Length: 153
Image (cartoon, rainbow, N blue to C red):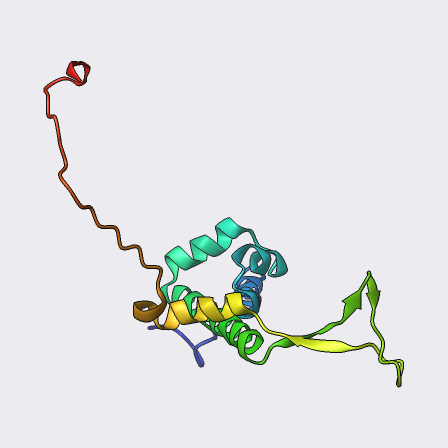
């Protein structure tokens, strides 16, 4: 630019621009862990309307949002798979009390597996094989009366 002396100066950052950038990063980081938009906005100390405006106005932010949701969903699916296949331990309860090993006195645990999660994962990954099937067949004649007015029936 004509008349300028010395090297170009960096753009000034206002006190408003930096917190917005930080809030976006905090929002996306929390969204990546939880896939919960409302909670992530609260953690970033911004409103839901604000994050939706950011998403509408900034394609890069919208793409990062989608990536964060995908990452959180992948983690959720991995945990569902782990619980379905590997199970999880629960204390053995009898008559409202934790059952203890008679020799060691330690609480007894047993492994539980989730048939519901197994079914859900199979339906998601092999829908052609594990989807709900409804095979309704009609045999016999069907009689239909078509009139110009419903009162004629």
